[in-house]
Image (cartoon, rainbow, N blue to C red):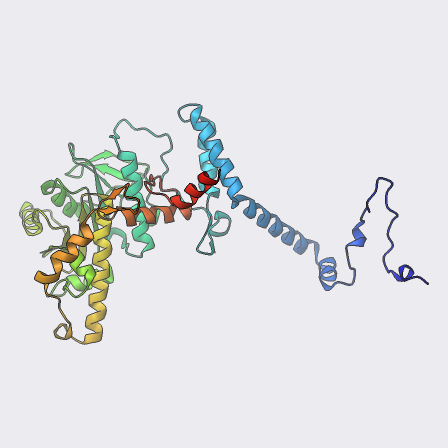
Length: 402
């Protein structure tokens, strides 16, 4: 017998058109354990496995760069057709749900983590009470709330972040009480005036906390240079605010803070005399205010600058708490000579940064804040923030190659 006669699988003759027509049993080994397991599987279980395979294929499609580029091109096409067409809104909602990607090796697809509520939820919305630039300010401030939540600095009603949208009318944005920082979005921020009267309610029926807003109002009323205020009392900042020594110059982060103001806060500023005392303690230039036994407040001429100061204040307080814990007492710490080091470190940290190409000048905190906005966008948060300096090297190489 020839070797062919010993084959266990019968094949059909090749068709007249050339080539071999393969049948199902030509590529299935009936003795394969995987085949036997699948054959003996119950119908319900087999259906579940089929559904999982389908979801896997759908996820791969949705995460593919080709799908994302196609979706973005459709959105741009709809934008050219007019102001807020119905097709654009539908496409944007689809994009919010699906435009997540893998970041640092983790699958951040909404199919696996659940839908990420977008920060920028004001597509095409133009309110008569909105001033120029307010929409972007809302997006940045809501993004800042999300960052504070992601860094685990949020403390429900005991922490607040506010942003001034109009110097002329002193209109302030703040999250209403009852929303967690993880729920902050551009539309649900409440716009109030300097005395707390609501100008624009936002997308919820929730109200602001007057006691939480009162220190912010006192600061805005006497510091026209300030556009953003962040108040947190994390365990580290609350611990240092209760120390008689205050924030010690024992780290670079502490020196970066510059002049630090202190005020014996009693929980609210209902009395006008208390407001004046806070304003007097803060002074005209300080960007960091320690509320005794009540955490730290960071001020900024921009949202980015305020985040710069609260980030370094949090780090400085963590370092100090750990250092005292290890050293046993403040007396065992090496305290830096402020006259020698403080101005040098502060000036270096607050100097305008310039990128390597020399094309852009960055104000305090802008470069770092934008990298965090890219991170949020990559995670699917849809910040709505304009990336002034995207990751351009790949783009430049692609254009050059084209």
